[in-house]
Amino acid sequence: IQRTLKSAKNKSELAELVSEYQKFLDLFIKTTMTLGGALQKGEVEKGLANSAVYLDMMGKMVVAWLWIEMADKAIDCFAGSDSAEEQKFLAGKLQAAQYLVRWELPKVTHQANLLQGFDETCMSMQADWF
Image 1 (cartoon, rainbow, N blue to C red):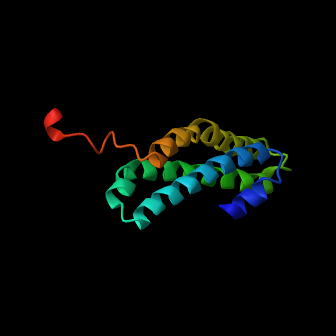
Image 2: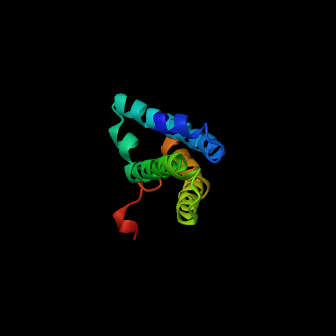
Image 3: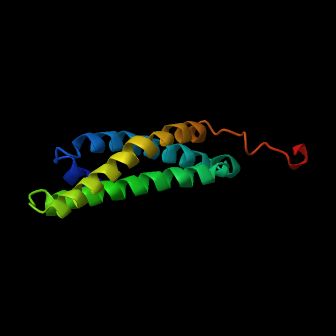
């Protein structure tokens, strides 16, 4: 991830997206460390109670990173191209990366808040309450 971000941040088309992505990556790392700390203390149930949310959060981070990487590589390959088709291909990669960072990654903030706060809403539900 860091190699991709280092390359992409030097491209004007991606610099802002990389900056936004980095903020979410920092939040993801902080969340991972918080959950890991609970596990290290033996608080396994507490640390894993919302593991599905953590996996969803990780998935968003990975998919956004991959689209930034694809956009970065597309710029390397097609930025100077005179081909209309190649320029459309490049525009599509840039637009997809923008979508993931601006529309999907903001959801990570809510997920991180739930995870870092060890929210027990789901864990404390009782089957006989249905």
